[in-house]
Image 1 (cartoon, rainbow, N blue to C red):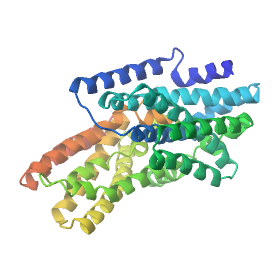
Image 2: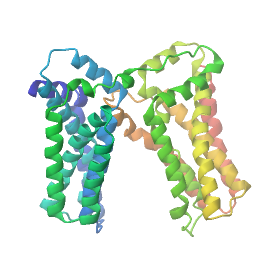
Image 3: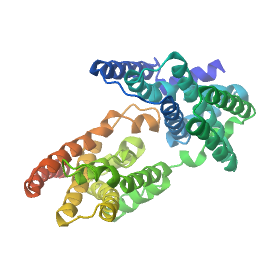
Image 4: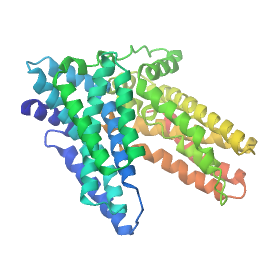
Amino acid sequence: MTRILKAFAGQLFGAKYESAGKSLLAAAALFWAVRATGLKLAIAPSVLYLTSVLFTAGVMWQTLSAGRHAETLRSMLALPFENRSFVSGYVSALSMHTLVTKTLPVWAPLGAAAPWNGFEIALAFLCGCMACTVTAAAYLMLRRGNAVCPVLWASGILAVILAVRRPPAILAAVLASLAGAALYLYSADAYDFYNACAAKKPARHMGYSGNMLVYLARYMMANKSHGINTAGLCAVACLLPLPLGNLQELNALPIGFAILCLNTPVCTLLSGDPDLEQAVRALPGQARHFGRMYCLFILAVNGAAAVLYLCIWQMIQGGVGPADIGTAILFATQSAILSAVLEWKHPIRGWKTESDLWHHPRKYLVPLVMLLIAAFIGTWPRLSAAYAAILLPECCALLYMTRRS
């Protein structure tokens, strides 16, 4: 197990575990930054436990089903191994990577803002460990066609955290789930973790100008995570009018457009597929052609979410007019242009898993710019002047993208 664990840990954290060091520094910086503000929040312990379970399970599932990670796993499975040691080392390495690089930066600000005691912190850590092992077991169950047990298992854990809320009951559920998941993984087959479908990549036929949008659409459909993230944003679009509509101090409608720009898989298409990037950059004239098609693709995705958001806003709050429709078009267009420019000129390198890619700080640059513009529009008395402020960076970005290399 130790050999397998070290091999996978080296793949995930780096040869010298540099990813772990960066995550620890980031978590420490977040902790002391929140502590320095003196912010104190009354957060129920059940919120900490629920966050530890749901966030960790989501990242663990994302890592298990990632296409790039499937290729690494296939290479490891080609070597001689002992089945139980392989499963234990593999799940342990993924769990360590998830907890250290993803969950720890979430725990840090929560720990600084709320006065947790030692037992609550230890229980939250156990919840994170349990989420990793149960997610691995549930992943294998679904691969074997058993969808009922994972749903009932997850429902039971959430029911204890949300309904019972007593620390002894939560601790008992966590320990029982850990034991059950460990027992199930003890008899698991290492080859069941290999997702051959995730390792496959769609064929690339991009030589003709008319095929680029078709390829991008097929690429999105072939990657379930892209569709799931887009569906999640559509769900957010349906919910945003409820809290934003209650803000009376400013026009909060543009804030929703800015939030809906946060579609990480779609905006990191080249970073997530180095082979695609190499193929695109090798073709002549792709800096302009691919940039335009990629802008249209992101515009279509963001525009669909913005249209849904406007429709729900009209149903709940009312008052949507031509100026708001124009704002939606400008926000979707500008976010698409800026995302395409950023992805073409500054793709993300050196990531180990899709989770590292999608949680990279670069993902927040475009939404942050859009939020600043949304705040500007919300407090500006005449939207026509705000439109002019939006059009300038759009035109500059478009010229930057389409200029000859």
